[in-house]
Amino acid sequence: MEMISLLFNGFAQCMSLANLFACLTGCVLGTIIGILPGIGPSATVALLIPVAFVINPTSALILMLGVYAGAMYGGALTSILVNIPGEASSVMTAVDGYQMAKQGRGGVALVIAQVGSFIGGTISILGLMLVAKPLSEFGLRFGPAEYFSLMVFALVLSSTMVSESPLRGIIGVVVGLLLATIGTDLQTGIPRFTFGIPELMDSIDDVIVIIGIFGVNEVIWYLGTNFSRATGDEMLHAGRWNPNVREWLDSAWPVVRGTFVGFFTGVLAAGATLGSFLAYGLEKRISKTPERFGKGAIEAVASCETANNSSTGGALIPLLTLGIPTSGTTTVLLTVLLMFGLRPGPNLMTEQAVLMWTVIASMYIANVLLLILNLPLVGLFIRILEVPLTFLMPGILVFACVGALALNNILTDVALVLAFGVLGVAMRWTGFPTISIVLGMVLGERIEQSLRQALAIAPDGFMTFFTKPISLTFIVLTVLILVVDTIARRHGHKVDEV
Image 1: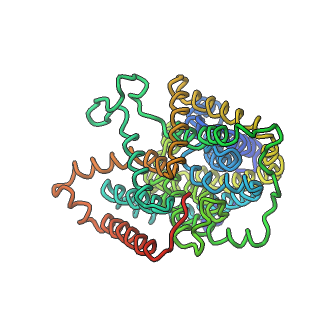
Image 2: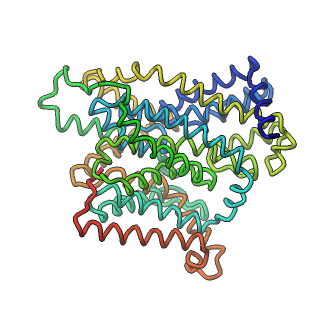
Image 3: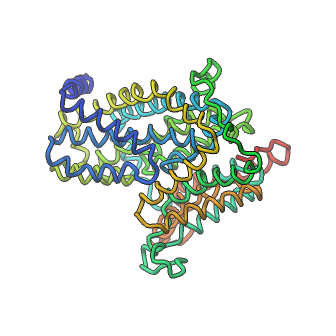
């Protein structure tokens, strides 16, 4: 009863004009940031720190959390309509979402994505209220060895799902892992594979790879396969935007499963990206028609977008109860909390009850506002698909290059985006799944760090991965996936390539 009383008090505090305006501003700004590739919520929240000095702490935190939540909603738009994920967490949404757009179901994908985002975000905040402390204590049991095994499990699960040939999927992942090693070694400070190019010393940003492999790849592929017969009348189809009963039913359980997958990956500091990978792999693994995935499966869009948004509530648990940030955005939020004299820990929810419960209530309001803001605009958004392809494709190319330039304001990033676009085309021509290289690239740095940290502190070397129960569990699951996948393919149950 005390929790309910505190929550209602938080809602009452949120109803003030200043707090409602901060929440609405954050939601709108976050949605725009999610649409634009290359900026990201962490950079935006960091830029808002000076604003926090001129408004009260409650409104400042509400504003920043609104940006955090809104960016997750906005990322679905460009992923589905023009195949350019603004963030790594939106990559898996683009795989099937863009195929749905090409089939005239882009509006359906957007509606399901927005509703799934709302459900996942709302339930994750409920989880933050109810199980914050025990889950944060469980998350402390994950060390470098456990994180390494978890990410290997995620990579194997995903790579075996995205190609008819598991070997091609794994090769693509390995190439991505190798690309992730480019840059300065964080432990020795020695440049690796930079070939004397100063701009590569800071490594290749994940967003560069994502924009090139998805957006630029699609433009070059279109030019190569349609140039001889392209006319100004060619276009994608906007189609309908209201899901039918079958599509709602097909999305229901994926939304439920995506909520729990995203929430727990958020709690475990694994992040929204890994959560969307695991959610996609889980849905395809248990589906009775896995061959539909990669060709416009509504279940994939529902689970991935739900997992993205449910991870936000999960990520707040270690931040608020332990003071452990799990992403760039939560790191900035930790800085803001400390700036206001708020020290995250087990007693924060009681010592600063009014402030914390107001912030929690604002997250509920933010999810409602985002749903109200985005759903009515779906019919307008899908009009993008009615632009003739001969005009839309150059626009996508310009959008991709501007997004790349916005990252670090250097032309090298633009050249890299174009290079990865060419690489994506080459992979499509040779039958390699383009998504596999992104999987390895996105998780490569974290896998390397976890591996080296685990070996540095382990007295028994590689045996540490087998002597820790959680790590061993993920290793066993990884082996089982490989065995089951091999047996299934030998019996003719092949999974079509994404």
